[in-house]
Image 1 (cartoon, one colour):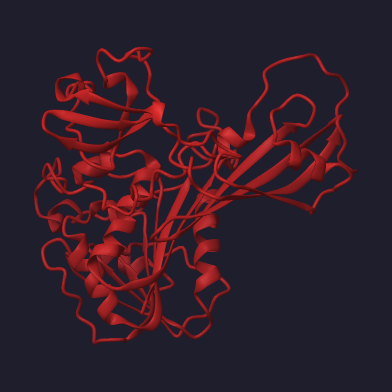
Image 2 (cartoon, one colour):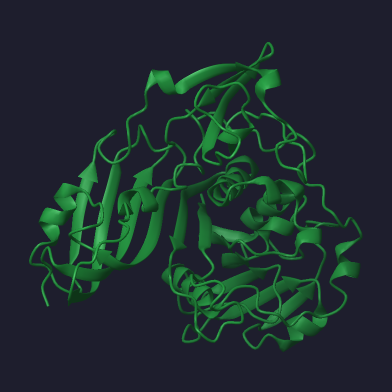
Length: 401
């Protein structure tokens, strides 16, 4: 069936953009897009007409074409005392350059109310004032939007209801992972690597935990990301490994070596050809020679590192020239062992933090971030139907120069 104004369809939106440090791709899966009622860019709608399942429509936007262009009127200077540090009851926050905060914590700003959780960016902190930015973080970026069309069906009736602004949905969050005007984001003040449970990790992980950290659909997404970069016959390092590695089942590697904390879990992992039991937070030095691996992966574990730059430097050392280091994560973790900063950040800011690890640790090149959201959660998942959407997947990677 071909798309017309009476169609409903499933689609995947792909938003691509470039920052000073990296290339970025955001994927949003959308169900039941109502061509007549929902809000879509006019050029996208024009390109959709007559298309069918499997087709793609591509449009590009200059700054201001997809999200509102940055306006000077949306740059404000407030007094430091207007920043409510105790806005979130479970922790105190301080304004830091490049970071994002809920608008509702700003006191005495016209039009801003305490319930407003929309993020703003801190541009500068000096002389008792804070420069805040209410502009969208993509407001000055060139954007490329592709809509990949899935199942198409004809509406039987149109009975009204809500409409969805799909461009707003796909752009909600992206941009927050980039530095502001090339200035490094201040992630590292305020003891960011402190954790609720400061016992040695070897004690916390002494008991094996044969649990699945993300749902099956999210695991497939991680496997897809790894499958795009890992090739047959590679030697791969699985950092912070456990009983699952999320490497595509049909990918035959020359070696997959795990580094983890629990030997029982590592022994249970059928993909590993070897392993090392090691606490990277106690000693980040890896027991491998220089250039011994073609690739390295770290899956849903980077949030536990309390000395990440040292670990990222070590990964760089053990990679062969051109080797890739892939870091994937979601929005689930063991709270006692996640670093304090991780819990404070917006999900897209976490990609910015990991990107900062790459930028500050070693001369990684070809840096990229990737996000995928909106997939349906498997019906056999224990969180269904309370949660209808699959766990989001975020990835950051770079290559050894």
